[in-house]
Length: 169
Image (cartoon, rainbow, N blue to C red; front, side, top):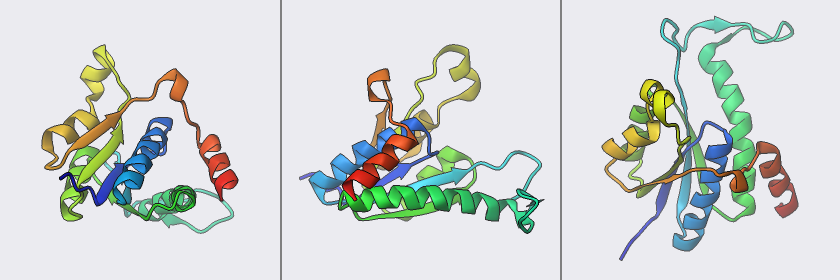
């Protein structure tokens, strides 16, 4: 019997990853599973998470890690509200590194039973130069990986997700 108790959903907070969260909610409902949201911060070459930035003249200087954590916390809070409105047990995590490596590592460290993630569906030169995080996760993950691809009929914006949260909450 298939047992899914923990689902990892990597998110970059794009439409495609919001769409994947909706799929993960369906799996979570069916299997009474917990969702672990993951946002991977890919730091540009030459920078470290200790680099200091001044995002707003009215605020104190922050390390790059602090700034990125602030941004993802706000978005995670919104997603947590949505998941709570759907009666889904969820937690969130931020990691730093190469996205596919961090996703696979977090999946293994947390004994997840399934990964649900979006794919941009790039082809041709874009795919050749950018590669596919989803393909790499599929290749290296030790658990099943379900990928979702957003179509024009399925587009979900952050604003629509927030409206969903407000209407169901």
